[in-house]
Amino acid sequence: MTCKNPECGKHIEKRKSAKRCYCNDRCKNRAAYIRRMENWYEVDAHNKVLKTNYSILLKLKNFNLGPISIQTLQSHGFEFTATHKDVVANYNGQTKTVSRLYDIYYVIENKHLIFKD
Ligand SMILES: [Zn+2]
Image (tube, rainbow, N blue to C red):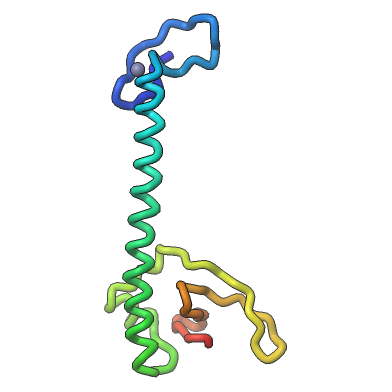
């Protein structure tokens, strides 16, 4: 088998332990570090998209335009690939699933985004 440290990739002789995946502790620690960095990068990139989306929504919300077409959102740079949290909210006795982005709640219906308070 090969060392699981992506920067190493040396061949490891099978020894006593079948669980041995790294040539040494340095490789093991390095691999863990790389994994952590990759995760952080993804979280960070995702947060950036969410923040951009948030500022777009906030701006549009303050215009009080009513439902906003998906086209308009896209022209502002809104990223639909970033998934926002879905929450179940209660509106006049009706429960509805709404999307949440920080403190902005909205639903998407008929290709339009509708803000919910
Ligand atoms: Zn190694």
